[in-house]
Image (cartoon, rainbow, N blue to C red; front, side, top):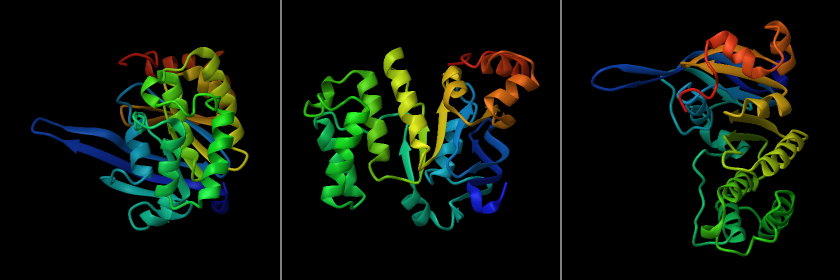
Length: 253
């Protein structure tokens, strides 16, 4: 993989948390690259280290050891440059329920110091694509869980980032909304690099170019869904995960 084509480079990344009784190795020496324009999936059960890794890559946590480069910028030494490149859709939605959808989106657009016309243009476009246009003037306290998730995704993308971290973006969506969101996320990679964490293994199988399987803080396999299914001679990624970890991906949730 040519260095000029690398959006994210991770080398020997570690994050340990200590308490009175033990040291928890949340991320335990993982290394990988993500190409520009790639839709890259992180798979693993709760506690595997997915969200911790995302938090390090986005500058929310400092690693115990190792390096991470985003667009060639070190997350420890050049965090301001990193922040200018990324958008984050966190597991816990960052929504103000006393505001309507448009007001929430515009608030975050203003925090990015975006031009007002650009905020309005992108807000209208994203609301339409994620089927929230009709509900956009209602206070979000009345939104369903799936609607909140879609709004959270819009907020993560309002600044038109080059690299987007999507942490469990379809949790709480009904099957129809989930599949339409898959199509939306797949289309994003036309001009963005997407890092997707998910418990829905069929989601990763359907839309990701490559996936990394992480468990107990370690990266145990990486490749395209097709490559991994052929390598382990199984018909889906769920069975790949079971074969190399001995358990189902949904265990421990």
